[in-house]
Amino acid sequence: IIGVNKGTKFLTYLDDSKKTYLARLHFGKRSLTGDVDGEILEEKDVPDFSQRQIEEAFSSFLGEGEQIPPMTSAIKIDGIPLYKKAHKGLVVERKPRKIFIYSLKFISFEKNVLTFETEVSRGTYIRVLGEDIAKKLGNIGYLEELERTSLGNFSLKDAVKLDSLNENSLLDASPFLPFPAYQIQDEEERKQVLNGVMLYLGKDLGERILVKEGPRALAIYKKVEGTLVYKPERGLF
Image (cartoon, rainbow, N blue to C red):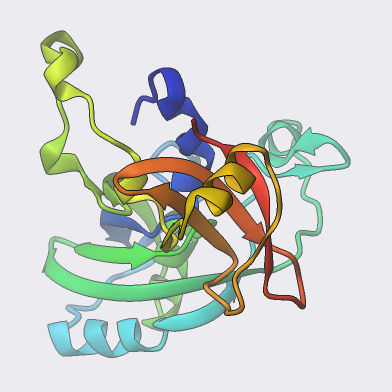
């Protein structure tokens, strides 16, 4: 996703959206990095898992859970990305992070390779999910291939090649933001938004709202904790 002009203001919020991936999990081998690029550390015979066995394993991962980030991630500890520590052969303690798995869909299982689709929250590492699925089935595995197919309401099938881009390719990003829209009520409220004044809405609309005037996005507001007051976080005008 490429942001242009005012569209760059939306990009940081799109990362909060749900993400959908198509993954290929290779059973019978465990790698240092959890993917095809890592050194193979262990090998194991692979049973002929049935679709039912795999789907039963899937069901145990659905919903809210915790996941320990891999050492090959970009998360910083003491100001240094974990992958840089890993390249030096270091392993450090990582705290579990809350994640949410919305769906896991079986596609196929052939020649020790499971192809599946999953929709997950921000911060979910699919390579770790793959390893955990293999472990749940009493085996080992690593990700052979991974493709992100959607981010929020953006789908890979709607992507445009760079050499085909033109003005007609530009989209209004506001409908794709992962929080509700709030329409300003009158001219006074419009002035408040344009001047960066806090809004008392009298109801809870969620952590963030997109303040709009008709189809035009004016600002992103964030709720003041413990109140029904929203404060400006980013102007879009």
